[in-house]
Length: 159
Image 1 (cartoon, rainbow, N blue to C red):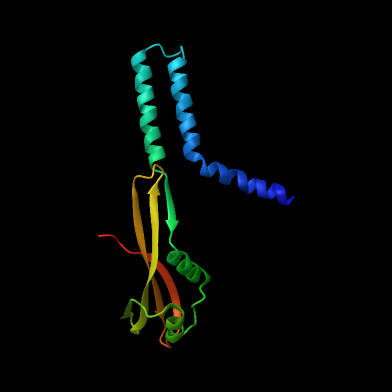
Image 2: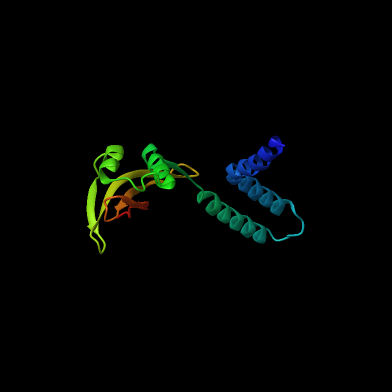
């Protein structure tokens, strides 16, 4: 039974990994069909169909990106998702994460907020020639008793 459940999850995952190749094979098959079919007599129409299929195929395959988070992002995301800092004092947070990069006082009660770097995610296109980094910050908000009230990870806007 466990094998069947594993197989049910493994097949879609495998297909997901190979989507660009599946699309390429589909595009190739449409082009071959267009060239060999007798249903379309006009060479001009065949050429236009092939060009449109190639254009859409390039756009679709070119839009696939892989995203790779660095170790800092992975660690901070785990902390944020588990909400393990909730209820800790500011001293305990500093002992765990070190000194914050920035400290703000905000809100009606002038509550403290620490800001840490949350790492980055490297994005690379399917073809590998275009890439970018998204940088994130980790914000920790404290209540009036100097206890962690909530945490969040936010994308730092690029200039």
